[in-house]
Image 1 (cartoon, rainbow, N blue to C red):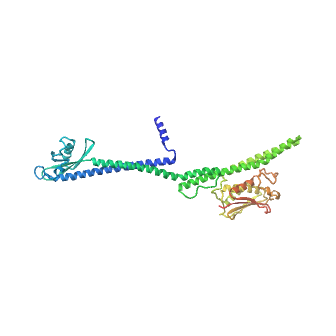
Image 2: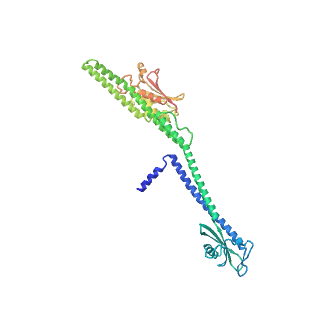
Image 3: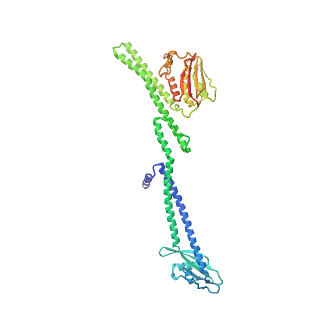
Length: 463
């Protein structure tokens, strides 16, 4: 229970923004590094100050040793002009016997006992004694070279100035550490905020552009590589959003346009039937007309919805290129043409590329190829050629061609030249092909001057 509560508290205290989290990580890392450096620095400085104190004690012991005479059988302390200065905090031993001590130090004091202990070791040695009043003293022993007699000089030094210097260094380093941490935190927040500013801008732009299907792009080739990759990903996402919006608008418009005619026919038949009493034959004819219009509406809906599903992924023409000859040959291999009809690809230019995806190119050409195969007598020819700034694909058949009276209605949705030809299409193939081509900056046109047969031309941007 406590661990759960603790996790909740930590989660509540944790920054909620990426900027805050990165700043906290940087601050924690800097704090650990600065703490380690501070500990190392103060440890080194403390040792350095202690070595300075020891050097001063050895220098004083050397000076005092010049007043000790060990040439005879007994150790003698010579009197000098600076005797009072040299005797300050100085103990002189002859072996284990104390010869002189500071006037303020008693024989049983901790300082005297420590001085006697390090003097009897017979070698240079130092020790620290903590006296009353939280004061520390440093003692160092130095044997006096000489003749038969053995003497040792022990000097003491108050470490208060050195400890004060160490404390001042520690306090200064702590203040400096705090200032550095504050500066590091502020600079990190500024740097992270500046680095994340393009991300925030891109997020706002993605929301705005996605809502209005804008043609703006994120990937400009400038900035860090991470932002460039993010821009590329957002561009792909926006392309999908634009494709979905475009298909939604197109599907809504086409449904509205195509259903208007059969609905008008149903309304007209009902109005005519209600205008006056009708015979059984007239009523039956009205029912048949309404049934035919309803079936036409269902066919239109099925065709448009199926086309929308099949082309949802293909309608995005961004970042696509298609080898025209390869796509056309692939379509002829999958074509279920009658045995009497032969489909021929005359696009032999291996470098001819259209600036759309292969699937998109197939969706544009398929309705034209299907119509050509349906009405051709023996041969359908598809030819790819270059045009200024683009490519063109001619789909030619040797059939009867398009009736001259129907040429004006050829690309109108739901219109068919001969509804009784046994083909159960909804008259939407050519309009959909033109609509897809125009969405990619191209066009689908009919060559009324071509004879015999019919020739349709698809123009698309070059790859």
